[in-house]
Length: 311
Image 1 (cartoon, rainbow, N blue to C red):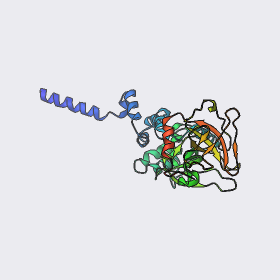
Image 2 (tube, rainbow, N blue to C red):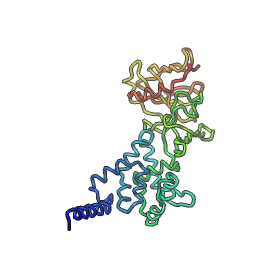
Image 3 (tube, helix red, strand yellow):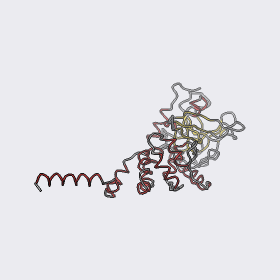
Image 4 (cartoon, helix red, strand yellow):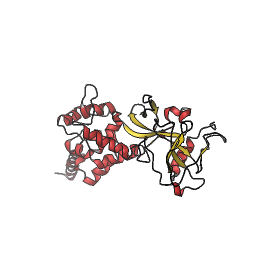
């Protein structure tokens, strides 16, 4: 055999060996680095390939990054507790029926109808090899679906209605993947039905910074530290039947600079030593106080500052 023929055969055999390699032949560390760089829909596509990749792509550590990147700012401890209660109360899968398709297959088809390989995913569903109910992947998909309502807070509720200017109210949220906005369901005010708002954007949302029900007084732990010029949030409600909202303010004696001087809403006083709910049916009731320490929080309230001084 001539040297040229030997060289040609050697190259052909090399190409054949390379063509027989799969992604699973990569070293574990290399494969893990690839999976870590995939977006959620990329992980779902990769999970359709085979059982081994499916198990890897459903790993919590891969989905924790996606949870943090997309949801961490608005999903707090209260939302996580709601999720834990939700999965504990369900006997079956946390995934939801989507028309003719069922379970995870139907759900992911609803989210990413173009990118999914249906036949591959049907085989996964038949084997019931879905992500565990308490996995991070399941939680991520439950949030994406909009079927899972979770607690958070909305700035300037009801599209900035004048009665809710410079405020932040508790609500239950549901995500709409098509519009990348949220539906907000607020607690009922007295005998009024629960108001609902659609089209709420991400920039108007936050996770609650305190673990206090909107119907309970927040126990203030910052009163002895407050100095003139400090920025604070304070609970406020119209009457005893209403849940608290949160208002931005500047100082103690509390001065609300969004109102004109002489307005009955401009100032109020609170006791450092024995602070409790204070107010009346005419002006409303002031509750717990929280000092704002981060520049991000302070700048957010400044963005919400009304263009005109309120009466």
